[in-house]
Image 1 (cartoon, one colour):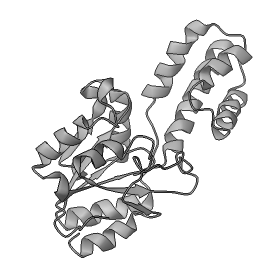
Image 2 (cartoon, helix red, strand yellow):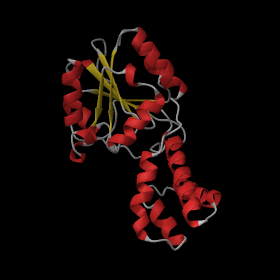
Image 3 (cartoon, one colour):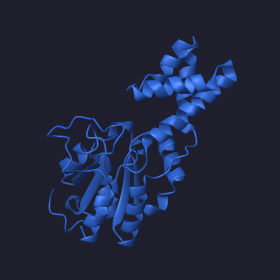
Length: 231
């Protein structure tokens, strides 16, 4: 990892970096199962367990298509199910290490920012549920710029750095998914750190030279120690 003594800001990803994304997923599945049970007199628990099982097997895109087909329901319901999933009010909590680190960084007066992909209202609901808005000087939701500017685009990073009033060399980006998270940051010269959690959704994503973070850690508390040395 690059020399870190001049770091003035820490930028975070949201999903599976600061909280368990699977908690949001399961809450969304439960909301969908509840809707189908109420409107089609189906077994809510059975639907939920099917969605949960498919997700754990690695199905992360066609879950609702599969449910509609399995129960012989109209494909017209797909948009409704997606809307219910995305807009449910999540019951999620920060990882314990994330909560401790954010408090520490606030105390140390380190600038903090958040960059997150995903539907705008969905991400806003997550931020509200986690009660972390006040922690960040800058929150950049890439979909507000346009879905073409989701990571690995450099635009969210450029905008965030500009608002933070820091140079790329003065920032660190912390995230969990090598597939997309670190490419844009690395292009700009931002130091990158991967948080690799057990049972994280992207725990087993293959790294390459282009997408590998500068440093991999298993707990965000490692960054607390780094910060105590003024980064």
